[in-house]
Image (cartoon, rainbow, N blue to C red; front, side, top):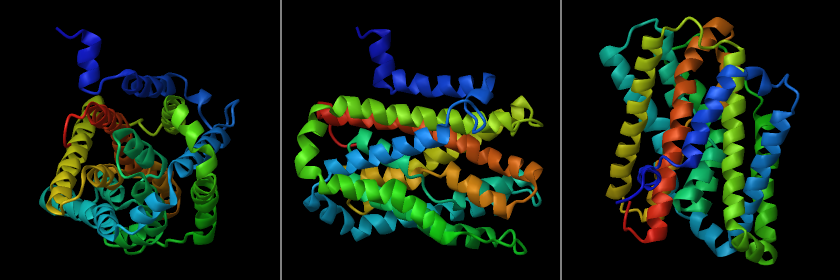
Amino acid sequence: MPSIRETLKRVGLNTFFFLLIGVIFLASFFPEWGTSDGALPWKTITGAGISIIFFFYGVKLSPQMLKAGLSNWKLHAVVQSTTFLIFPLVILLLYWIWGNEGSYIWLGVFYLAALPSTVSSSVVMVSIAGGNLPAAIFNASISSIVGIFITPLWMDLLLPETAVAFELMDTFIKLSLQVILPVVLGLLLHSYLIGVVSKYATVLKNFDQLIILLIVFTAFAESFAEKMFEGQTASELLLLGFLMLSFFLFMLGLMHVISKAFGFSDPDRITVLFCGSKKSLVQGAVMGRVMFPDPVVFGVILLPLMMYHALQLIVGSAIAQRMGERKKQGAGKI
């Protein structure tokens, strides 16, 4: 008979899962520890950590792997279409059926649906689950740039008079320095460092997870410090959380069906699931400051994204861990 620990691990409730929950509670009790005004330069630490992660991802890639990943146009089309087309259309349909005109919560849910995918957590989870890493890096990176154009266009359906302006070049430069450049450097050093990376694969995996924990902690610390959750009753928060969880699981199921219909391999299917289901809290916060200048309104609009962000990390990480373990054990298809 398996132990309690083994049973929990089988369903994805491992140490990393509980650490994710733990850092959220820690941020709620001690938000000042994780804010930008705190004692530690969290933005610098997490930014450097992300660059290191992508450097070693680059090392893991061979030129042949990268070429094969970038040439998989069908996979890229499905992921980007899921992120910027299917997501918003599903929410629009629900809004037309049950939506409350003038509700900032509904506006926040649609804003969430129109956002680009995350970069770091998408790629990390694809790596943990054993998916197509080159395709994941490509899709997660390009999504941030595409989102600068697509997200405002979608929001214009509900906010026709909103003036939207973005510093495209600054965003591209930041993405290039933090993600693309480390990957390229790692790829160039592939033949020299691949042996070291293979030897210390477990250490690097733990480092990946540590950076995700820091990102979650600092994101929630800032939110609690700014009192974004005030004015909401417990029942309202629970209902919204349930709706966000249902939406996340529904989209995962829908993408699983779509990827099977296209005949994708298991690694490609994993990439579709994790790159297509994620939404970027960072991108949402940056663009939201321009599109929603009223901080009170913006706090309410950001609430669905905050909940979805937590769920995609906690539930997504558990699913990724489970998929990775099944792949190692040769348990068959996902």
